[in-house]
Length: 409
Image (cartoon, rainbow, N blue to C red; front, side, top):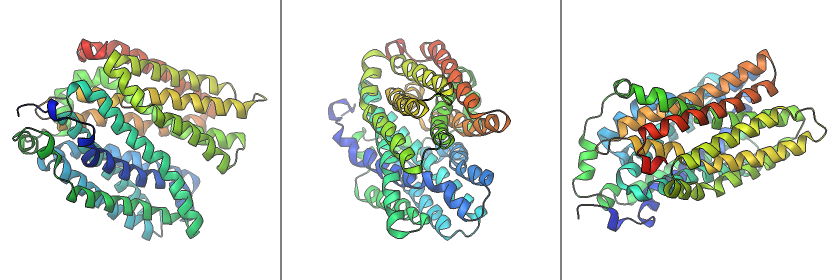
């Protein structure tokens, strides 16, 4: 069989692709909300605790550098297994940490493992999913991550309530990583199930160029379209920082904040397949532009509501609308990366593409913290909202230039 289209079904990617991604995301989602609190308990100042919380993003950015090379050299399944092993090592470090420094190193390794894991999944889906299913499949993959990040915090809260210690959430991370390893060892290699006989071998054997070589080779594309993708990453990262900070500034309790943010997360998760349908049927821009402009508008409006009598009601409405706007764009970055990647050996390009988006993701919390320190939280929120409109403009101009018109539209 020379092509995979006749054999492709969503069931065929569930065990090798979607379930491991869900497990990994549940583990990651369970620990991220409590990182600042654990760091504070270990003696970190508020500023240091915030920096440690950002170590996951810095680790992910650093992990993008070797991940393309690793996946191309050893294959996506082995890369995922090694990433899960690294996550277990990071879990042990975090659980045994008695000082902020060791804890921060463990958090950095979690981000590093997440980068390799995510790139391996992305490369597999890019190589083996037929193009007419690509956006829906990648949006479904994005949906599994969203489901994990939605469910993880609730599992973490339950474990903390039962054990009485916040560091116990790392048991979830460790057990999920162990389950990923077992699953990938038991399930047949997806390259053997979905690809033509020599495709998996070619994918593993082709030597990848280094990240910086790839960045240079695609410098024009990454500078233009990549800047828009970086803004997408920055806007999504800012949302996860801004909403908890805004709730604190309004005096909302932790339980109410978790409930409100959880509702927004549920709406975000519920739209992942809708986003894929929009991209496959109407084009990538019909998902990207509404998502970016919607989030930008929500943040600009939120910036003017802090001192209004109904500030809490405004916060609830904006949180829900942000979840809707982000959900409409589910999978857009992975889909654009897959559209642009060389079919024969996509991993190096995808590593460079993810590095571009993760640079925006890592920079956003630092920019927000700087503006809050120098001016105010509403100003930081408003500036991020305006950045959303800039990102929409960049994508509107550059996506049709680099993505085939039948896909971009």
